[in-house]
Length: 283
Image 1: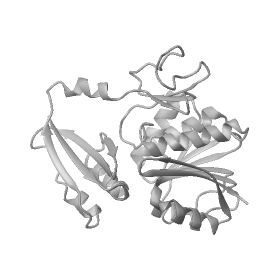
Image 2: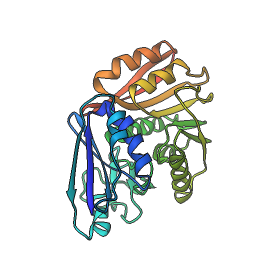
Image 3: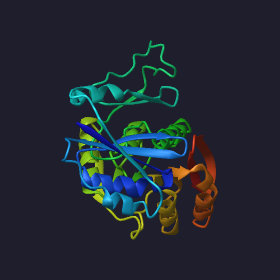
């Protein structure tokens, strides 16, 4: 079994990931560090796809590609790398189906209380297992809204991916919840994950580069900065609160400026490494 990894700058990540998912719809592994993000696919020697389209998607930016042989029992061992993600001091736990949620009495830092929200999402065809800083920060801001008594009314998850943010929002009390994505595998994954978690989630295909989001009081958008600016230019007047991430810390000011033109002001900000997340509100 061969592991083929592509490492690039975070701002190139969306384009690289989209191309890899076309080449390997069975799933892409993700890792991140200071100034880089890495995606990996697996396959037998001689069966891995050509990465020419991925290099083109990087738009001339430098990417690093490397391959390595992994043990024959990788099919069983890869699950060992996916641990439960504990967020907001244990208020939310996101875990794969083969992992148990940490017990309330656990010594784990931030171990959940008995009232924790348990979300089951298996790694698969769509982005979002809860491990990425942008996902975690969006969850933290949604929890902050819930703590302020504002987890109510309709919510729209733009670029829903695996549906993890939509599922967390529904479990916090938002309803009805809808998820939009351009990729059909993502919509299928989000619908299946919602079913597994006992959540009602309506999913729809949409191109956010060309279409305005439906009018909804609360929007969560874990997208890249350029796409967030596109959303800001078409933001419906019905949107009163918006949680967004997927942007680099150095891009936060320009994203805030774009949404300010749509009448949205920053209320909270989270930072984690190179990444930032914002809670913006109208007026």
